[in-house]
Image 1 (cartoon, rainbow, N blue to C red):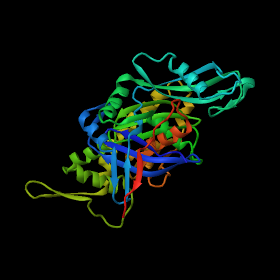
Image 2 (image 1 turned 90 degrees about the vertical axis):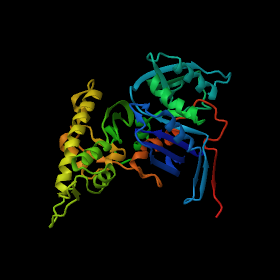
Image 3 (image 1 turned 180 degrees about the vertical axis):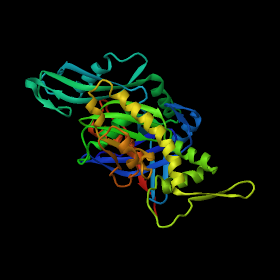
Image 4 (image 1 turned 90 degrees about the horizontal axis):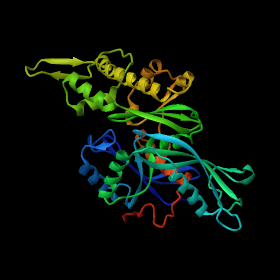
Length: 399
């Protein structure tokens, strides 16, 4: 069993943490957190940097009385948004160092160093290197680093993930200010796609749509690998605000009605109001499920327009047939009642499916990226030696 890992994601409105480990390519969860912290991130930059730092600090020592668990975290796998993501395919070859020709960790580090020194776009930072395969003499091919195999040369074909420098640094500096170490970084949709790739009933090629509170990301996944990603400003809170302004109620009430009813198309034998609102003079206005649905549909029309435009953007260099790829929805706002049925006739995808994580203790669709990061770190070995625990300590509180 791998040592426990902590994966951290700070989204437009929430801070998310999953602590777990991997056995047989399955993520097992020790602790999971998805906590609203207010709208402190926009387009990958912190609107309130100090608030983000304080939220990260709070994760260094976690005490869960219900689970009788105490967790000390000193470093995390950090999820980064794909804003400005550029992915490059590269091949590098190195000569084996040892006299007997056996491949060792130093050879893997050497070839990764060659990749790191290769051309990266100006103002972009390298986020991660994802090997497709390793090739030895006589064309012998391995999916994982072929430690101990004999060869004169080692070639690797890999994808290089890069992000704009300011995106990377905003998250990095927040962790540094909170005295939280960063073990490794992953682009969020890549992590999610790796977790989804282990679900045998899902397609290998699809459009991945992660619907958050204020931002939606759209990614192209081919043969279970991330090829492109884009984003637009729209999320579930846009619906909440629309309901609140239309019905003249608080956002807390609007959120409750959104979650409870959504696009409720049920035909009931009676007609009961969803809510009753009184004006300053005491006059009552009754709102029904169809009123709520019409308000939500107005906002979803904006979502569909931006979603289809984003699909056009990421598929502009591909054959038109790619537009019919199935669509998988993840993220907290994907749980809106009736969203699947509303989207299916309005997007080019042949089908739309809402997907939920299958790891016990973390079934929240907003935790896909954190779960995926833990899997990725186990699946794609880091080139650096690890001399300290991934999670400081996980202990049970005495009864």
